[in-house]
Amino acid sequence: MTQDRQTLKTALRDRMLSLEAEELTAALEHYERFVKDAQLDIREHYDNSEIAEARENADLAAAFDHPVKDHHSKIDALETLDFSMTDRVGPGAVVRFGGRHVVISVSTATFDHDGISYMGISPQSPIYQAMKGLEKGDSFMFHGKEVVVDEVF
Image (cartoon, helix red, strand yellow):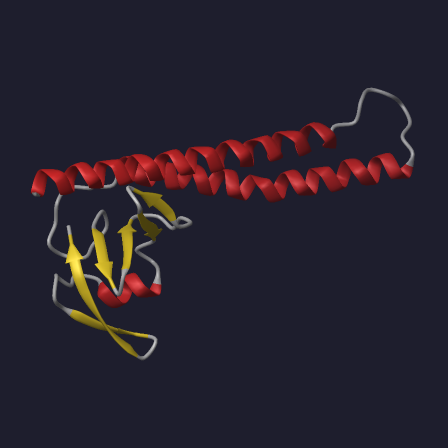
């Protein structure tokens, strides 16, 4: 059973890495497109609309710079995080509670693996802070409700 859970944790980490790589690729494509469109060709004179459009594209490129850095950071975190087996809620743990499955690592959109929906949550998230260090069977309060930790590995 422990080996199956470790295999599952590895598969979840790999899936999250894949999702972040896809998001990074999309963010880079947007960034590069706007950077390209922000560059003016070599001429002496430009009309105001050309300069304004180039500036707007430069601003959009700058806006896409943050997601690029964010996805790089998430990939780095996933690659270096310890996903070994654990019985306490902490970074690298998979936790089941209230019908939800979360991976304590980086925040992600919900994703499916073998018919089960998972979500990556950050150690800075409020729900993680509420259940940090707990074990299977322990409970915590979140949004005024008592929640029981059903499983941790």
